[in-house]
Length: 135
Picture 1 (tube, rainbow, N blue to C red):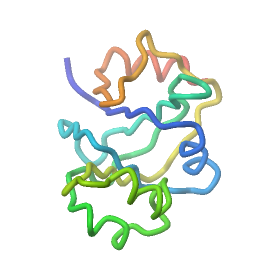
Picture 2: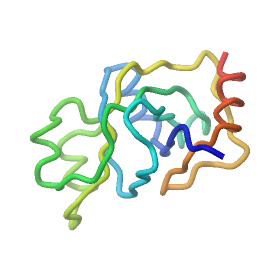
Picture 3: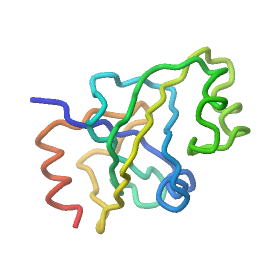
Picture 4: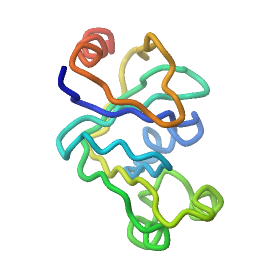
């Protein structure tokens, strides 16, 4: 079965920065690198909806040096510089997903199992279910 997307849990307050403020860069501790530019980044809202709430096209994905991320992405990051410094404390590298063309779903799609902190790959079968149910 083919991997077609990746999802990471994002607390509601940060997810809102994607769909209200247009932020386009996710940063996380775990790296799921079996996706490529053009694949989907599916936003899983981990507090409020506890569901997939939208998706975007991956522009780039990879580990980057922690000390260059805020300089490179600035206000595009979905967390503030201060939040990033606290989150990334003691880590030489972080996973960065830059994305574009975010589309919020008309209806949140609740997965069969919650998305763990480490994130998860989305395979073709689940992707079809999301596509069918997103409204």
